[in-house]
Amino acid sequence: PIERVPLSIKDFEDKTTQTSRLAYNSVTVRKYNNENPKDNELFTEIFNLVLLTSPDPYRPITIEESHKYFKEGTFLAFLYGMCVGYAVVTIEDTEIGKIGVIAGIGVHPKFRRKRVAQKLAIELGKWFLSRTDLKKLQCEVYEDNVVSQKFISSFGFQIVGELFID
Image 1 (cartoon, helix red, strand yellow):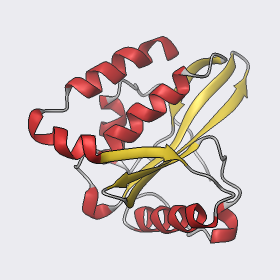
Image 2 (cartoon, one colour):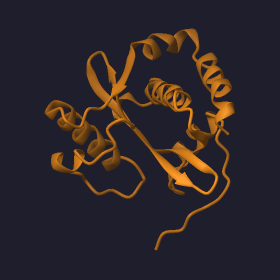
Image 3 (tube, one colour):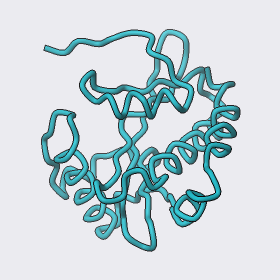
């Protein structure tokens, strides 16, 4: 439920130890602008690199395809000015109302375990909270991606079902 997000954000921020605070504070997150050619290059590059090195099914995207991504619901993460991660969210209309969906969080392989995904998740939580029309949140994670399942569980998500795609 959306009401749990503030507590999840606080818990996540509290987990940031003094030793990891430097990396966490050095990560900046901003919205992706699909009308900006530089953002399209950055997003395409980080998206393809992350999925190439993850257990999720991989299909590279082109710069032209990057224009299609939901402008307001896509974010880029930077560490010392270098694009090191992304997050994509969508809003879906359902029978209970609008729900926010975390469709993907990805971090450059060299920068994993540096609090980049944590910072992205917190920023997504804040973005979702700014939407007064949402009833709940969900996250879609591939079955074989155990690392992502553990990460998203640490943010307070629980497994509630499975979706099978042929």
